[in-house]
Amino acid sequence: MSPSTHHRSSSSPAVHAAVVGLQWGDEGKGKIVDLLTSRYDCIVRYNGGANAGHTVQVGTERYALHLIPSGILGSGKINIVGNGVVVDPEKLLDEVDGLRKRGVHVGDNLRISDRAHVVMPYHKEQDAALEELLEKKSGKSGAGQIGTTRRGIGPAYSDKVRRSTALRMGDLLDHALLLRKLETICGLRMAELEALGASVTPLIPEQLAARFAAAGERLRPHITDTVYLVHDEINAGRSVLFEGANACLLDIDHGTFPYVTSSNCSTLGIPAGSGVPGRMIGKVYGIMKAYSTRVGGGPFVTELLDETGNRIRARGREYGTTTGRPRRCGWLDLVAVKYSVMVCGADAIACTLLDVLSGFDELKICVGYRRPDGSVTDRFVPDAERMNGFTPIYETLPGWERELTACTDRDDLPREAQAYLGFVENFVGIPVELVSVGPERSQTFESSQRFAAAH
Image 1 (cartoon, rainbow, N blue to C red):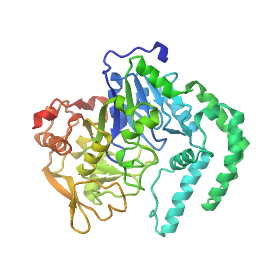
Image 2: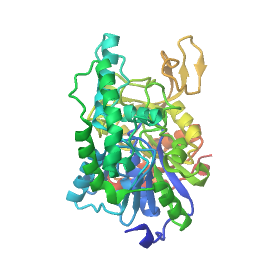
Image 3: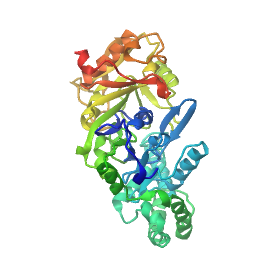
Image 4: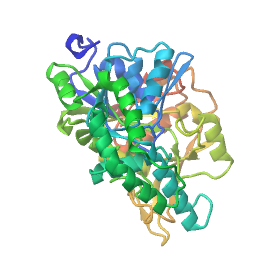
């Protein structure tokens, strides 16, 4: 359905909204976007690249999306990949082909910014080479690395800032321009890869230009000026849902630097990554797991390196959508969540994977940090070095035995599970409006008990 023939859903709200992760990613943003899609007309992805993985389950069908907004699984929606995303054209085409084979319509309901920067094969080689060099310099296996997905995301964003070595999606539509740029880029990139100690085959501009111009031709129907597109949709009275990738604690400016991603993945990235002013966003849904996980290096104060952590990982199927790597698991860190709520301006929480905590006798929630010198703070520190040696200060809550997967309302939950959610609300200061107790669409419900009722 093209924008010119698109009609606003009768259930669309008057305000535009955003979905953002409040932890280190993998909170279930894709599922919540999929759930909310029916209420909005346009779904806009504004940051990140194919390093992100949004898993959505529809009935028995499970979809892993990496670049395409989760709204593609809805009917009659416009899905926009904004200028703040870095796009691997070949991965995107694989994703399009995979969805079409499964009967999902992908046509003019997918639009890609002509200003989105391109992830090239040499970006992936550079990403891997730098991680290996950092490990070698540290002298210890796995140490020193940032823990990237090696999908070339960081180097692509680096080229964006460098400008002279960058390619944008619009460049793929002009073979002569693409070749001219690659003739400059390839020599520089080979020298950089050699300096990193990488063993790579020569980069031949003509071959790369032919390969990616072909990808550009296949994507031509989707590539457009998405800034004007999304504003045209807004001016026509249609509603927009912004879909964040990664999460606030991985934000390049506001996360646990340097163990972060290379984009602004908090809501603060929306204006730059989409061209839509922040004042136009009327509601922000912050997505939070009922516990904490992270992938890769960096501080993780509540990490559990024991059987409890293993149990959470097994029950939550905590393995990366993009890489398959096992995720680090730990108790819920509300100091971190409250910080993200502040930075992102979150109005409501969607709590996912609450069912994973069933069966524990007691549950711990981090409400403060103890520094190495013994002093205490209730403030998150977005700097990996300064968080070294922090230990958690816990509140202990009673657990519950009953499985939650059949619950359809907050009142259906065990008293202890309701108390757990109430503790989150009181500590963070905003309501839990959505609760997920299983992977299917039907296993997420709106909380009937509002925040005000808890006071």
